[in-house]
Length: 526
Image 1 (cartoon, helix red, strand yellow):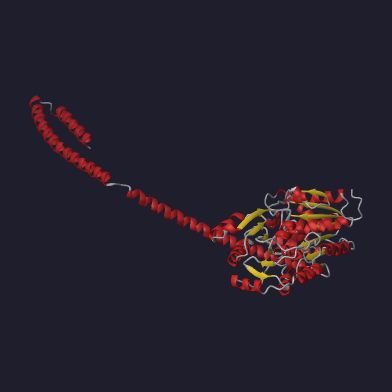
Image 2 (cartoon, rainbow, N blue to C red):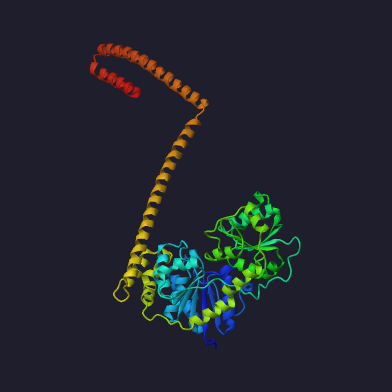
């Protein structure tokens, strides 16, 4: 049991190394310093060296992923409820993706306020299917006491699903005391520093930056971060002939020190703020290319989409070179802007004060929905609950009942139900097409096998067949010749026997014997 007045449970699908983890670390640092007890529950088993100081407890290994069955979901919700009760948690803060719904369920069932953060457009459309989209947009978002959008872009996308003043803009923030401006310029020959998760979406932009940096003679490039796209990026850079200018440093916990000693910082998101705070030239690298050197105007335009580079034009090496030539001495100005709008201490202090007034929604369908999830029929289903049309139907029955009915929710249910049917039809047509293709492939294979078998009958086999056919014809001719000779012999014998029988005056007895012999020869011949 926590002795603190307030206690927060953070629920996240995973905790590894990246922007979300840095976001959580800043929240823990500021709120723990204000007396909050902070607990964390996640689907992964986080590495201890990357856990932020100030956490009161960490629970890992929960089944918060999209493959969870209804039984898994219930078990996870009950684990979260146990944490809430054990530590007297007063608030629950959820993060994408499929961890949002179980976190919201646990908070509502324990009657504590629930908040969630939307970190980008993918937080609203992550590709987990229409059932997940329905649970997020029609239950989790409308029933949350607070929804945080990290950018104006996300605010606009989330607005249709969140009513009242529950939706707030809270820009990503950094610890300015950690990324203090460098007292001196970087040493000669210092590398540029790229800090990024190396996944399939981000490596094209990093590739473009390394190539342009090499063209402009910026020197070496150190890449901090890891992920499934690392090997692919290494192969690309070798193909481009720039692999020799890059060092892959992997995941590091000393990024502030690396920034202080580098020539400049490149990347997206929070990395740009850290570079500004470090007093370094900063290059915006988007998903699809290089966006340019950061100045006050680009800072403002990039902030709209959380410094991701989305909807910003790319610049080529020549354009980037011109920006370097006229680079303004505006590092101090950018640092002032960032400090006013992106300070962790200020951001999380405002958040902590705001959520203390939150109360849980008493009139909520969550208990009735949870009863459906815990039903024997749902628990027995072996498939993922996010793919269960029967479970979706059962939840729909609750929401269409008189107690919790709302026209908006009913319309949303019908919309996603139609989407499920459409996807099912697409799957059916694709399967039918695949089946037809398999039949054609089998038919073609059989035809090819037959042709191959025929082609393997060589000339020796044909000659053997011709020889056997000739032998059969010769034997048949011999049989015909023997049959004629035998018929002549029988005729001679029959005539002779008849003469003898006449002389002996026993015509019937001898004639009968002769006839039997002739029939026997005839039968044997057939």
